[in-house]
Image 1 (cartoon, one colour):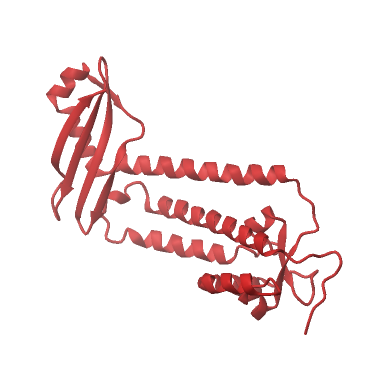
Image 2 (tube, one colour; image 1 turned 90 degrees about the vertical axis):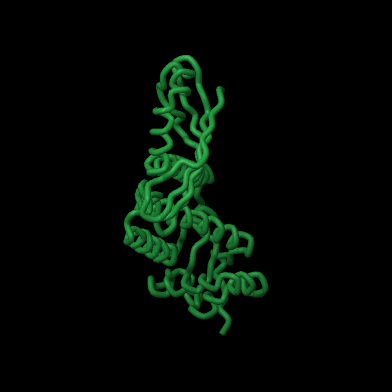
Length: 255
């Protein structure tokens, strides 16, 4: 059976639908990453709790549940709201599909490559979920200014990147490897003499920490602020199962 569109409604174009999907994908991926980091805590690099990944797994599952529920508010996800699209029942364009229908519709995104191919090739501009559940994506007749939409999306991305940057910096500083490196610096008589006394460190340390099953490797470049001279310290550490971090390489240069 073919359903005719009311003159007040216009089916969403493929470009708009793909753009809305990409916006949703990035937003919910960012939220899942942020929540997962928050659940793991800044001490996750120390790898000391054998059950430490359970909160992360639970948080990730909740994040995917939220992703599948993204259209449940008035048939609009963040991406659809931004591009002024909405999901409606195909046989009644004035009616929002039930929460169950919207959830099932988004579960189909598990097979997103197939859904993408169907959407691109379908003459009806529909993906497989729309055909199976009886939904359609149409343009919203409500005109919303672009300014608040752009401002909201821009603010979201800025907050996300700031959170990730600060969280990773805090996690590195909270790691046992970084504390060991810092302790080595503060007990190095040559650095103390060259700097005239250590006053502090760069706010954002450079480096990485990797731990698996009690073993690990770490590398840092730490900027040391001295009373008279600043120095950069390059330090490599390793950790064997059941032991503390051990310094492998240590060198420094003046700024």
